[in-house]
Image (cartoon, rainbow, N blue to C red; front, top):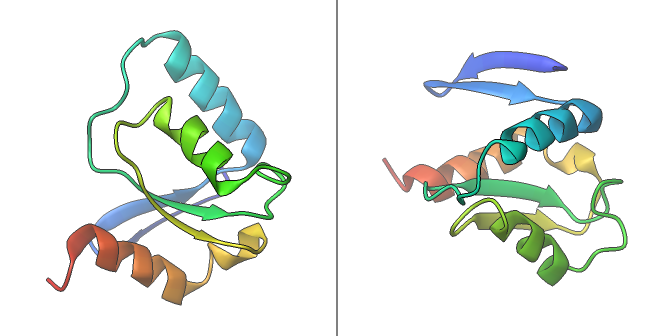
Length: 98
């Protein structure tokens, strides 16, 4: 894990790709069902993990594990995700104007 903090009433974590992949492999090897929960995903299209994949490819991969993800994407690097205004946009999608 790279970073963890509490903000806007939620615990946030940033994981390295290696750590994320290890966690994902562990969890998916012990489950056969998709998560049927509200899921809001920020995807940087030019991030090393997604590089070379189309948005449609990215969506297919996410939909293997999540029933109906809401995806905010941008054609840029992973640094886009860490900007507070983009996290705010994710929260607006998740919680509306509350």
